[in-house]
Amino acid sequence: MEHKTIKILLDAHALTAGYQGTQTFIIGLYNALRKVGIGVEIFFATTDAVEVKIAFPFTDDKHIIVFKKRKPAILRYWFDFPALLKREHFDFVHFQYISPLVKHGSRFIVTTHDILFNDY
Image 1 (cartoon, rainbow, N blue to C red):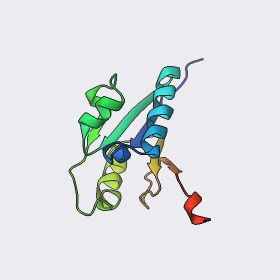
Image 2: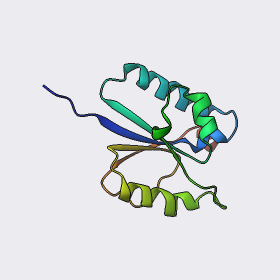
Image 3: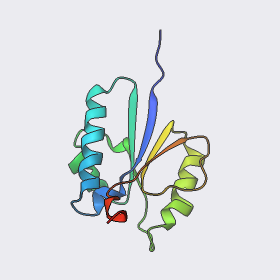
């Protein structure tokens, strides 16, 4: 039985935001997933390919999608991601905190970190 390769796109902007818990989570999760590796192809969307290569040194350049830096950064969710998702098909797209409104057939994973402050 042949297994389908699962294509995952990670919004890797947290890797360029300096050291934080979100960055540690992403690096740990996707390095563990890469080690399992059977049938999974991981792509990284970022504004800084160097930071992705530092966090994931075995990543091919073809798996890094570089967006231009926008001010404000939220514009990547209004323009860059919808255009990319319309052009390319990913089985899953993983975001931190927020996601674009337009899905174009991909399933979204949105991870919310550090929300304990909302209770205290």
